[in-house]
Amino acid sequence: MSGEPAAARERRAVAVREWLAVYLKGVLMGAADAVPGVSGGTIALITGIYERLIDAVTALDIGLLALVFGAHTGEGRSRLRAGLVEADVGFLVVLGTGIVTAVVTVSRLLDYALGTARGLTFAFFFGLIAASAVVLYRQVALDSADSVVAAVAGFVVAFLLTDPTLGGALPNTLPVVFLAGAIAVSAMVLPGISGSFLLLLLGQYEFLVDTLTAFVDGLIALGRDGLLEAGATVVTFVAGAVVGLLSVAHAVNWALEARREATLAFLVSLMVGALRLPVAEVAASTPEWTAAAAAGVLGAALVGGVAVLLADHYTDDLEYDIDASA
Image (cartoon, rainbow, N blue to C red; front, side, top):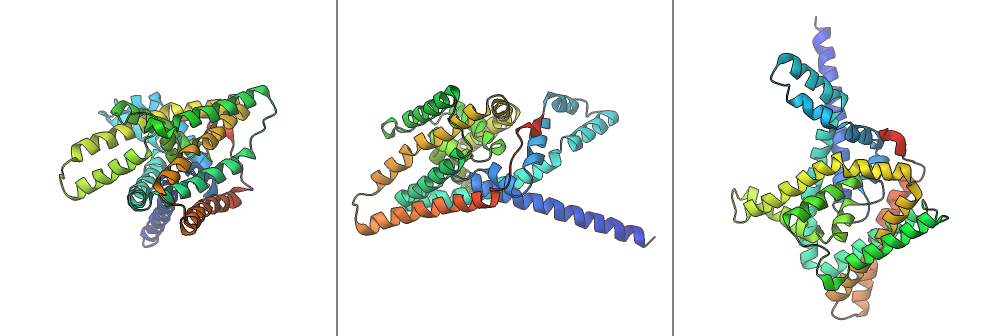
C-alpha cells in the first residue's frame, strides 16, 4: 500500500514539472510577442510546442462551446470534461497564463523605455523588424505574378498605414482595439510575424502598452482613477483575441495552405513597408545628430537585429507544417 501513494506522488510531481515547463515556454512566447520583431510562434517552434499549439487552437470550435450548455447534468459535465481534455484546453490555459505574465512584465519595461528613450527604443524595433524581414524573405519565392503582386501590395499597405502624418493608422476606439486583438493573435500561428508588429502597423501598439500599464497600476492601487476605462480596453482586446483564435488564426492557416507563397510574400512585405514608422520615430526623437547619438541609434538597431538572428540560428533546421491543423 505504501508503494501506491509514492507512485501517485511521483505522477503528480511529473505532471507539475510538465505544466511548469509549458508555463515557462508561455513566458518566453509572451516576452517575444511583447516587442515588434520575433514572434511568439517562432518561440513555440524553438521550444517544440508549435504543432501542439496549432492542434489545440484549431480544436477550439462551436462544438466544444455547445458542450458548456449541457454542463448542468452529470453526463453533460463528463462530456465537457472529455471535450476539454481532447481539445488540450489545459495546455492553452497554462501556456496563456505564461504569455500574459510576460506581456504584463515586458509591457511595463517598454512603457518606461518609450517614455525615457523613445528614439533608441524605436531604433531597437527597427533592428528587430528589419532582421525579421531579411530572415523571412529567404522563405519567399517571388517567381510568380501572384507573389510579386502580393509583395508589392503588402509593402504599399504598410508604407501608407505607417505615414507619420496620419498620427496613427487607426483611432484608439474599442471597435479598433477589438479588431487589433483579433489580428494580432494570428502571430501565434505564424512563426516570424510578431503580434506587436501588427499592433505597431495598426497604430495601436503604444496605446495598448500604456493602457495595460495603467490597468495593472489600477489593480495594484485597488481602484485607481482610470481603471474602468483601461479595463474596458483590455477586456475588449482580449475578446478580440479570442475571436481571432476562432477565426483569423484559422484564416491565416487556410491562406498559407491554399496560397502559401503569395501569403508569405504579402506578410513579409508588410514588415519592410512598416520600417517607415521606426525610422520616422527615431528621426523625430533625435533633435541633433551628433556622433554619440548616431552611435546609440546604430547600437540599439544592431542589438535588435542580433536578437532576431540568434533566434533564427536556433530555428534554422526547424520547419513548421502548415497541415498540422488539418
